[in-house]
Amino acid sequence: MFVGTPAFDRVTLSPRGAAPIVIEAPDAGRPFVARAAWQGAELTAPYVDHASLAAGGTLTVRTSATMP
Image (cartoon, rainbow, N blue to C red; front, side, top):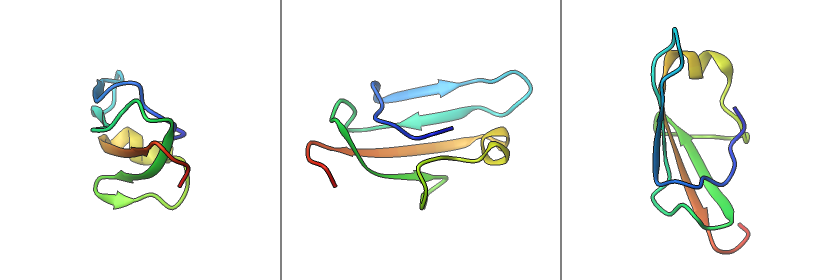
């Protein structure tokens, strides 16, 4: 899953046969992704791999009004 600017503050995805995935974006609506973390660990690439998603967890996205 590639990380982009979220439109909602919080969404829970419940894929069939996999654990839930929560996407949190406390400052959603700003145009730029400043940083993102999967399960509290900062992402070093703009995506989360399939194995991590299948295990379920929380993606936290911080956005910014200006380009980082």
